[in-house]
Image 1 (tube, helix red, strand yellow):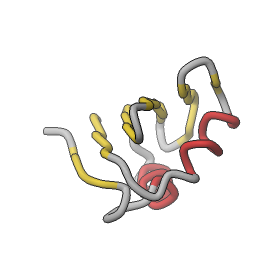
Image 2 (cartoon, rainbow, N blue to C red; image 1 turned 45 degrees about the vertical axis):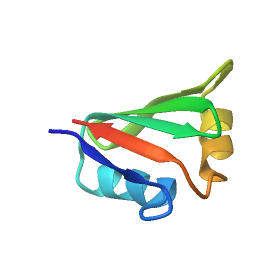
Image 3 (cartoon, rainbow, N blue to C red; image 1 turned 60 degrees about the horizontal axis):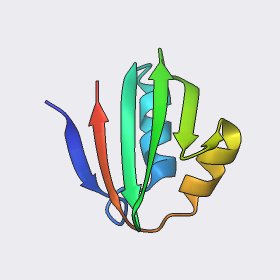
Length: 75
């Protein structure tokens, strides 16, 4: 069952930290102001991120600035 919530309650930085500490493999989907992004984890490491045409670290940094929005974490 996926974990769902709002970035106001749990920030992207916290979501990344928890997944890395717990060595999880997962897909994190984020939505904010009509934009959708994804962050992929493999054994606790961020292995891919995408936000529209932006990929990699740049996508993560853009999404880290989001103070609100929905997330779904599928393990």
